[in-house]
Image (cartoon, rainbow, N blue to C red):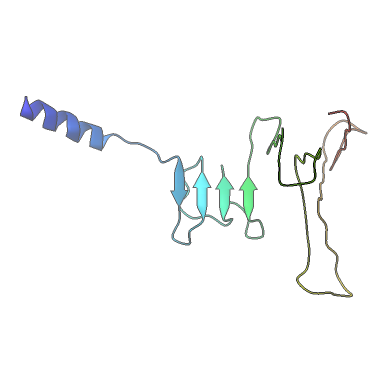
Length: 122
């Protein structure tokens, strides 16, 4: 019985498993791939980009990131925010610009390319 247990234990240890979450030597985190070095601090399904803190690569999905906020106590009463963007320099400047939400879209049906779409009724 002891030999059977040792055999089973060694067999389980020898199975080829893939990690679901990887942390590289710089502390960057990757999810959903086998890459060992990431450019973004958090990358999903890819290496990320040097200029992006969070990178999400989607294949056959309708949404890259979906956020739904049902209720919150952190902002004024009766206000719910699904996605919030804020860009602020740490000092006043006469040059450059700050953009809270920015989007681009292309290669779809003519007239139906929206970088950012606002729909009040959801």
